[in-house]
Amino acid sequence: LRARIAEGRGGDAEVVYSEATCEMYEARAVGDDARARRCREEREAARRSMPQFNLHGLWVGKYGTAGYEMINITYAGDTLLATKVTGDRHVPRGQRSFAVDLAPLPPDDPRAL
Image (cartoon, rainbow, N blue to C red; front, side, top):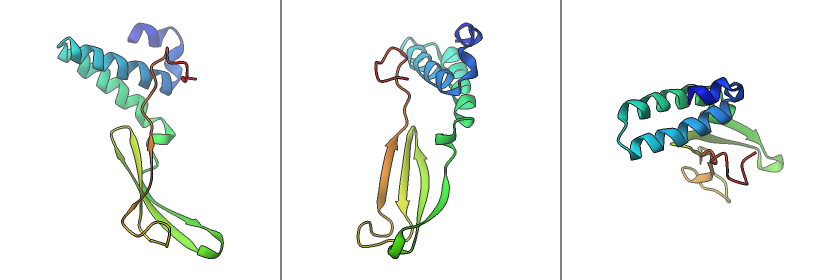
């Protein structure tokens, strides 16, 4: 992992996160707990600098005549969860407003940037 990061791709937290995630799962599959732990630490360090993983907390928005609405952003693994704090006729209070899968795509996936 460090060799790939040293190649110059390490400046991009998304790349580091994706590669560290893939290596972490590979290490776990072969029972290399020490390598899996190092990859997890590298993954978490990259994740802290990625804005999409730092949105947790209360968010308020104004929606025209509907007025102000509040959601609570939390995470379950790589999934961002938005739960309504103030409800309306579309999404009642306490219900999920939306969820976003933020899991990295493998570098060879055609959908990866």
